Image (tube, rainbow over the protein chains, first blue to last red):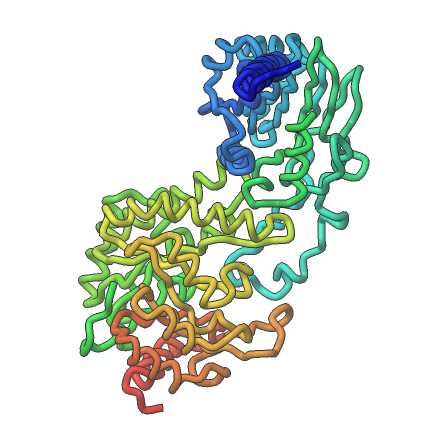
Length: 248
Length: 286
């Protein structure tokens, strides 16, 4: 069969173009966004009791997140990963929104900031977590003696920091086992956590301080010892651990 | 914050040196008789100046100081050892900020332009990186307040005690990050211990030095069981070098005696002896 160079190029060009369009279409179909937002970092404003924790996540996630206010999160239908740093107070509206995200398949990283709440605030916090996420938290555990802040100015010899007993004989790390192994500094007060389903993913000794469980179509990751300050301090383990959450 | 050349350095001593049981007025009388030009007031460490001392009472303190022929050199505090700016608890940090703000307010009321702040405290519990960031944040927050008040915040070098900003270059970098003419260093020439040499700190920080604390130090003699601080000229500080460095950088501000080791007897004598030693230091006849 005789075919001119012009015809050949025309036919093959069209085929390539059609194939290319098909490719684009296929790629578009394959990568069709399943979520409105890949990673939402929720700024709870005054209800974020550890602002430095929020800063830590901001620094670690850099451009890979969209920072939102609770009202904005409510407007999203789907979000792949939602991170809520330093949760101090949690009301029914917020709990409901977060619970809804889990039901629709999001991974929710809920970092507890309740270590520094007063007794009544803590009780309310406990109730909300139990009601909406079916997890149980206990009163914060003091991991260090208060005297570990240091000492009064120019202390007398007997009270010098070096002479104080080491109230924390153990290694000061939370040991995370999922989604990746990590050892991250504790944050002085840890919130013990448990639930009827799921499993502990982080411990300080025998104390379970991080939990993972499925809720609806999603995964709840609850941190009873804040990770954000370690992220802000550029802790490698903390950053790697967060990365492993992001690629779940 | 450049120091004016030619003026003479002035002598001050802390009101926390006033023997227990003495009134503020008795203390002022002693300070004046011993030859000091001013007095350093310690917020929270003496009964007459607490966090809840009202403005009117602070103003009355100023009147008493001036009636005694003295001025207030600066307002210091040791409250941050128990309430650190680097605490993990945001509530404690807020309280620590409030302490500095109150220092700035009282400094204005007392007519002086510098306060001493213990910037941060590294412990086994709270690691260096966290402390650094929180102290930086605190100073960035306080810098506009200090600027508005016209009062300089001098972060004290507490090399061994607070285990933070231990070298002069490190301290320099920290101040660079804060980048405010109202945040400098309150240099304690005794606190450097065996981690360095006071005269080198003076040279490096020169115009950023807000005030100078004077005491001597017994280097390499432990610090857990015996105090390493002692009176001027009987420790290991190189006083001729310190004096020369002060001249070199043109420091002509306040020298403030901070005697950690106290006389067991004749407590008032320590004021006279210290004042005389400071005169010798200022004169350069060492």
